[in-house]
Image (cartoon, rainbow, N blue to C red):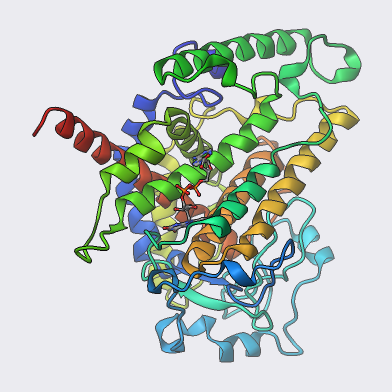
Length: 453
Ligand code: FAD
């Protein structure tokens, strides 16, 4: 079992930092190309301005800096013709309705509608913004009736915006609070004893205990190296699932911090560029945050790799068939280059306990992640909200692929993926991949600084 590999550097994932850096060197250009150079993956439609924060009054936390603003696509000529309002309203006429939930379930195929033979509509009409039982995020409604705007993700890069202070802290606090699972529930790693009712075998229980020991040892080592008190490892007795939840959030936070430090505005000179002090303060002195970023890379890669077969039937409709087949080819090449087995990340060790408690742990996990996606409507900086929404949707999609797509059993009911979910997944992979590259550069800068170069 890869998870028992004692030399694993990224605990909870199966690959070492070196493995992941090596993979990233190889994959980064493909991911970048896919995210930046295809219409399908570079436009995202979302409701950026019309959703009220469901948790508190957010009037005071707004960011007025220019860098916080988002350029939405105001001229429809800038998006593929097939996505324009006029086309969308044609598609939603009396003859062409949103497929109902029943039809969606029956179809079990990634085609999102049957709105006319000549139109590949999978990227045009999204169902609605209602949650499917297996969603980890509150979905974005991409239909013509939705209140969304198209945004070019390429023209609105994630970078320093100046959004900070109480408003930003309140959001992070609320997000981390979602990790406080109220009732202690048993996950596989807490399986002290196994019984036929617990749904896990004696071998699995032993493996889980060993895995837990490896993780503990690794975390202690990391804590010692970074000078942190070992007793500060307060998640030690938590089950794997809760730790994964925390690591996803913390890794996403680390990725955002990396991007804002790497593309930082020097307010004295007015120039944009890497800020080493920002990096040292937020990341270099917190190796566990960097570890969580690598963990996220492993998790997302595993999800994208699992889509290899799924995307073969997917209609990448932008109205440009040449580009669409190129897009499919590019994502296939990417998925093929990701090791297929669980060498990178082994999701099968999670939610193993099939008792009622095991199922509710998964539900709890899913509901909490949905709440994180709702908190994004409280972010007071448009640019941060945009990327916060894209990335929570990206992780939500990865979790959906990992935990709701089954494990390769024939004929298994796979949930449908909305266009927004696929776009978010690939752009989130692009963000983490770019963050790992930025970290490499930052490390070189710190070394050069230490050597007085
Ligand atoms: P913060 O980053 O606000 O962190 C708050 C506290 O969380 C820290 O004091 C620390 O205790 C803890 N913490 C920090 N990092 C981690 C971690 N990785 N894991 C665990 N705990 C951690 N700003 C931009 O300039 N550009 C953006 O694109 C941007 N996007 C954002 C998106 C979202 C969803 C949010 C909530 C904020 C965003 N911000 C962005 C703001 C940015 O994240 C910081 O909040 C801001 O720069 C202030 O930083 P800070 O040093 O006070 O600590």
